[in-house]
Amino acid sequence: MRGSMEAGTLLRGAIYWSFSSHSQRHLLQRARLRRDVLASSSNPQLQKSYQGPKPKRDLVPDWVSNNDSTARSLPIYVGGASLVAVLVNRAVSGIAPVADASSSQSRADLLALGLAVTSILTGLVWLTIKPKSISVVNPLGVECRMISSSHLPDPLIAELLWAWESLSSVTCCRCLVVVYDGTCILQIGVAAESPDGEAQAVDAARLTEGSVYQGVMKSGSQSYLANLSLYPGRSELPFLPSNTQAVILQPLGDKGIVIIGGDMIRGFTTADQAWITYLGEKLDATIAKHTISGTPLKIQDRV
Amino acid sequence: MSSLSIGPLIQLGYNSRRLPGNRIRKSIGIRADGFPASKDQQEQLNVSVLRFTFGIPGLDETYLPRWIGYGFGSLLLLNHFVGSDSAATSAQLRTEGLGLSLAAFSIALPYLGRFLKGATRVDQVALPEGARQIFVMSPAISDDEKEEFAWGSYVLLRNTNTVAVLISIQRELCVRGYWNVPYAEDAEKAPVLDWFQRQTENIGLGDLKDVLYFPQVPGSELWEMLPNGTRSLLVVPVLQSRDQSGNEIVKNRGFVMLASNIEYAYTEKDRAWIKVIANKFRDLPQVGEVFCNLDSIC
Image (cartoon, rainbow over all chains, first blue to last red; front, side, top):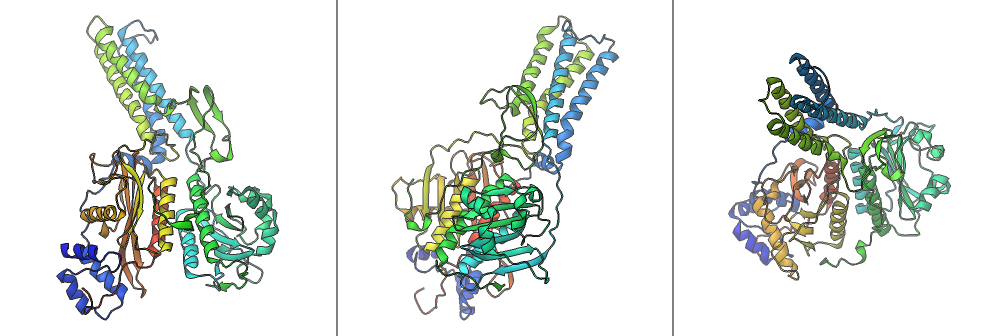
């Protein structure tokens, strides 16, 4: 290990080299193999396995997160039960149920009642912010995976696919369309079905002239249509499945737009919106870097 | 902050507004608000919100049950010792026992409420003292990779409760934020990077397979390089599940480490997004690995 560290320091920036005796033997054996396989075999011998502390399981936070509705109503039950218990205690002990502060017992009872009421009120506050469970509506349409790949360099394609993979795994996104410079670069996910049974292609020219696009470009910031059925501009997005529930429109600079369709009303959280804004900026920078301006990307291949 | 000159590549338009937290402040008394004030504050929960507030700015009513618990609990004790002339009856003892347990429950309520869905975080975030803000990257990486690292670290710092981020992919580092570095302000980059490299190797983070999340950092000094006041730590490994020939292997390409100065800083959603950002680095070309012929320099 130490030998490798010294060698690494000496040759830093040039060649990363490791020569513990163990890996030397590996290298001899695999001298003719490709370099990435070589790297993967030599690394595990050098990497120390993680020996730090492991995170311990927090019982209470885990329980609360997992039993959200029970936890929300817990203070109400506790408060209510205590209220009843105080009154029963007074009754059983033969004290008149008069709420005055004259005796020490009454004072103690009043304080306990006050605490019970606090608990009940807190439970009520918690209950009012219970998230409404919204059901997922499966989009009706055809699976589609269309990238304008003819002139797009690999890093850009990789980034677009990464964006799709991220959005579809973390958010409720079910379809993603990227339009840049008057051309649809990417249409992936579920698309509306066109009359001939294929996925409905994006008419980028028509989209760019529509009010939806113009509005987003004018404001320059993200537009979140939490319930698409209420939105009159719905007709300008015919390529999205007809029962898309929520849509985020993210401008890419002043030349493009990302349209993200979700399968749940108000399915995109505030956090999602913030992350999508940054994602849009990154895509904009990458596309601008890789796209040769003036070359219309008209050819669309299926990937 | 001491910055690494990356040139014009990092001119991403960083003008996006940070969407504010979901705190809705209303006037005195209890009001049931039908709809939130503005689009910015629209919660995804979108239910009518009952908020009890005194309307005093800066006062956090989430902790009201805790203060009531302390106050009434101490009054109960006062009442027990000072209030009565005669000995306490058993009924009184029962009431006081009930009252004290209710007080303890009230004190714990804000803590429990933090973990419910839709809870808003209003912790004051203080910058770590004694730690310097640095931004260094390994020099031996291409401009594209530098841009990726710069963007990734920027987004992670801005969009999560993070004060320090360390990205290590194939032993190439990008370190940004407040770190506890034992070097002077104007030290050379190379020893700083080497120091971080040694630190991470000693901990053995190169071989991680699972996400490590410490919502409450155990002990005051978990690892030497973390800034003082670190309360949460998240380490996400960057795994590649397929090698170039398409075989299914799980290979550790590196990791992304985030440190925060508030507890329970990263929710499930945060962690999902951070994993996704970390996956961006997965596809970076294999840096620094060169097939070395045994006959040549070794």
